[in-house]
Length: 309
Image (cartoon, one colour):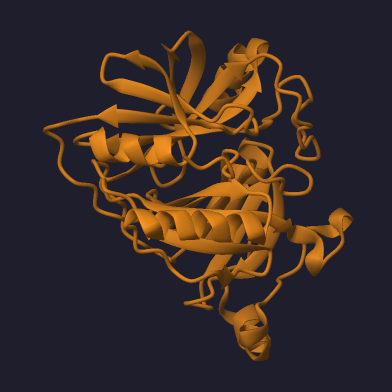
């Protein structure tokens, strides 16, 4: 069993409009845009990152906004709902705020004793705000949301699967432990991980497979401290039979990818070097940053990319 993985690093999804996506995460949810760059494989598409002040691992939601992309179809074989941690006594205030802003899919529920506010993003992406106690992570309050209700980072994410067996075994191999069951949901968590350390498997035996599009999670990334720990994870996964990519330099972290038995794309990303490699912390996300291989396209990209604000 691995012990290098400490919880989530980031979650990456698809969107249909960069400006609407930016407004939702920075204005509605009050997160900080910590990076605006482009997709390594499609440089005419943004890669936008939102999180806390520095983009700490476990706080960052990222998006590829493909202009006018069709809506995805929810189903099994995907990450279904991403959950953020907020102070326990802030849920009523969040419900009022999201209702005032006409956010879709608004509701309340309780899972494993935790009260949640459920809501949808601009493309139908499913989210939850989980009322938690003792989350000591410092929130970003520059978006105008007070410390008493601001998002602390991820709590975790759901995976929707027809059968949990092989994926549950993979999570156990990755260092997760089963901590509870409720109806068709099994909760796993990393002991002594970061605060973004929960994965819930929702088993839906008769559901159709998801079709990826705007609002779909493209991949979910797990955090390791550094490249040495990442190589240990890669070797162990390959020894177990998984087809794992070589290490890829993503400028702000190094990444490896593999497909899970249930169809979800997993990434293992390093906490190093972080988002302050090409701009100082005070100005994160304010200017378009380009990977070196796309630097020669700056004039064209600044002309064709949708203005964010």
